[in-house]
Image (cartoon, rainbow, N blue to C red; front, top):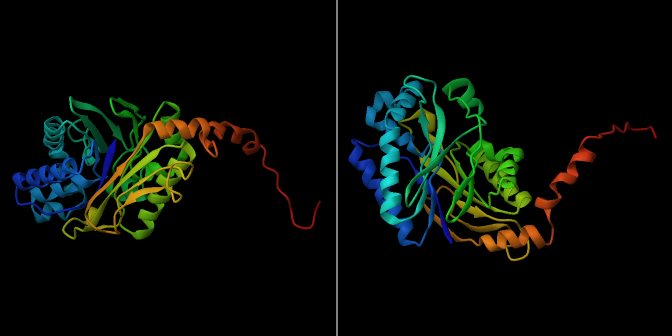
Amino acid sequence: MRVAAAAYPLDFFEGWQTYETKLTEWVKAAVEGGAQILVFPEYGAMELASLGGAEVAGDLQGSLREVARHAERHWALTERLARAHGVTILAASIPHEKTPGATPVNRAVLFGPDGRIGHQDKVMMTRFEREQWIVVPGESLTLFDTALGRIGVCICYDSEFPLLARALCEAGAEILLVPSCTDTHAGFTRVRVGAMARALENQCVAVHAPTVGLAAWCPAVDENWGRAAVYGPADRGWPETGILAETAMNAPGWCFADISLDLVRQSREDGGVKPFAHWPEQALPAAHVTIAVTGTQ
C-alpha cells in the first residue's frame, strides 16, 4: 500500500471556509499521489486559532480554547474527506476538552472510508505542555485494527519512549503513525531518532508527519522544524538507511512511500536480526547491573 506523511505549514485564516478549502486540497493531492493512508501532524489544527482573531491566536490559553471550540467541526470535515475518497486519515491532532471547560488533552483521531475508527490521546507531555500550556496526558493506548493493517499512534514525544510503541506492537501493530510538532531542529531530531528506533526495534513501519515553517501569529506553534518521512528497519528487503522516503527539511508537501506488511511480517519471522522477537532477553541482564570501580578487581 502507499502511505503519505504531511510536512504541513500552519496558515492564518479569515474564516472557516478557507481552512476547509486548504484541507480539501491537501487530501486531494495525497489521493492523486496514490495514498491510502494519510498522516497529518501533531497540533496541525492549531491554525484554527486564527479564527478567533489575532489577539486570541496570540494568547497561549486563548488559542487553546479557540481551537478546542472547533474540534468537532475539524473532525467532521476530515471524516467527510476520508469517506469521499475512500482513504484512511489520521487527522491533525487538536486540543480537546473531554467536558466543556476541562483542561484539554492532545487528541489525534483516525478516520477510514466508513467513518471514525477511534482516537489516541498523547500520553507523554513535554515540559511546555506540562508547565506552560497546561495540556494533560491521555491514560491509555489504542490499537486500530483496520482493513489496511494494524495501526498504532505515537504522538511526537510519545515516540521517544520505547515501551509505548512496544506495547502497541506486541498487541499487533505493524504501522506506527508519528505526528509531531517541534519548534527546533533538535526537537525534530529527537522525534526522528525516536521514530527510527521504534521502527528498528519493533521491525515495523513508522510514518512521521511534522508541522513546518513559521506561524508567528500563534506563540504556541510559532516555529516549526521537520521533514516528513517513512522509516523501516534497516534489514533485508529494506533500504540500508532505514529511510523509505523523506522530504527536504522544512519544505511543505507530502512524502509518499510504498510499504509492504508482508515484508514487516517476514522481517519479524526471519530478519537478518530479530529485535522484535529477542526483546524479552533484555530483562535478565537489565535487572542485574554491577558497578566496576576504577583500580579494583
